[in-house]
Image 1 (cartoon, helix red, strand yellow):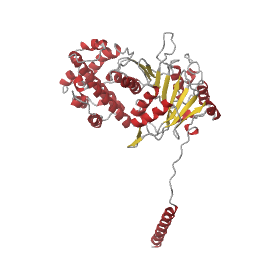
Image 2 (cartoon, rainbow, N blue to C red):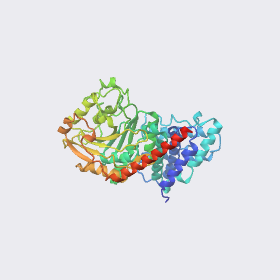
Image 3 (spheres, rainbow, N blue to C red):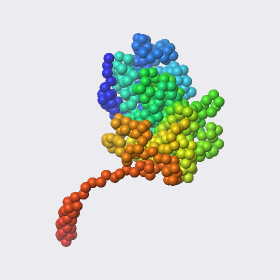
Length: 493
């Protein structure tokens, strides 16, 4: 059986971006690249089904795919890769899978591939476009992109998706932060909320679904059986498209991903028409969005803003209050990434913070290292909330020193993640790093949650050789006098 070489896969994925992206930006190219990856993956999966090599016992998926026409496969289209009309044939195949998989299996209310047109002028005039698609199909027919069971296809496609999103986020910069949460942050969030078999897991701003998938994998790593269901909502249609494809490529069929604005129109309701509630809620929502629906919040039919109405200029607490309203009363726990300003900003946000403390919902505040996100350099925090808490305090953790620096970015290592999650779950004081703080102390600080008010970091001191400094100063002064003398000679000349 062929093994998965992460280094080789990463090099190939990054080479494809460099060679084939052309006039498209990274996010546009992702749409086309991921669609072709889907076509190749599902084609190899169908081959496994026909050869009875599929270990997954999802009979519905087998029924949906077992009678797929041959001309809908990647291999069939690739056999005529140099013929005219390759873009049209790709579009036809993707439209077929829209109905066969995303409408029948996932119950999607919209077409996933409708915005991705392989006959678009974005790819150039017909001759150049077909040459481009021909070369890209050739690249995807290499050994790295073999997804059958013999080639560990399931692990291979997951590795490719990870490197693909990492590359797009890196290239896209500020725009890339809208759909991708750095891997280390995703792992940390998952470990903080500790999903278990049977949990319902929800992300109200799911982007490409990376956080949901990471939380699902946390269950898989610790348990033999994968018993869960994933729920997500995403406002951007392009990101929703990617999230649906991403779920299928990761072999997740027990999920529901909805398209829409969660603050104005949350899509998940119970049998009574109220907000659906979940065991685990986690998210990396967009920071400080303005014009998010303040007027509608005043008359919100779900009662999400009983603890206060967030300001029209910043939606951070709108996401927080929606997520709190989406937690189950007994088992609900949530974690989200937020800008540092949510800890101390005044006016209506100060009132919301006070009410969250009084309602005993806030469990922990964790300061993250800077430069973890390619989309922003502003300080960020993780906020953890829980229903049915036994403690009457808040844990503050300053983890800003736990990171690895590499090429202008900071990363959370496995060791960093374990350090932070261990401190959180043990919930105790660690000098200069963490402290459990009573409600009365937070009240005395006017409900300001700035971490430095509660965790004092001892500044490192260094022994100073005063005589060496004096000598260095004299030496520099002598050099300065010499330069001034030379300058006067030049001026005189």
